[in-house]
Image (cartoon, one colour):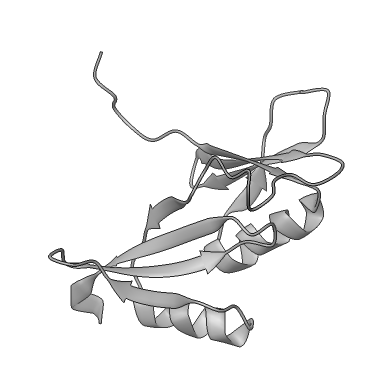
Length: 125
């Protein structure tokens, strides 16, 4: 059974509305159809694919000592435009070159502190 694609990442949050807005404003994902689960949440789409599943919870979703997901990554185009967007929204970003690879990573954190890196082709630098 070969793996054929990345399906989604599930993120717990006590800031559901803020997270929906952030993923929309910063990464261009939009809220779309979601299964009728008996708990709050949102599925955020990239095109026709629900890429990020948010689960609304009460209390602290994680602590720095109890992290099970170090990061997730997305691939994108338009490095300069993305960096300008982050700057205009006051979002700190750490840009790094992947050693030995033609990849530039833009490392950011969502409102819950989850690490995301957005990868660009180094030719865009």
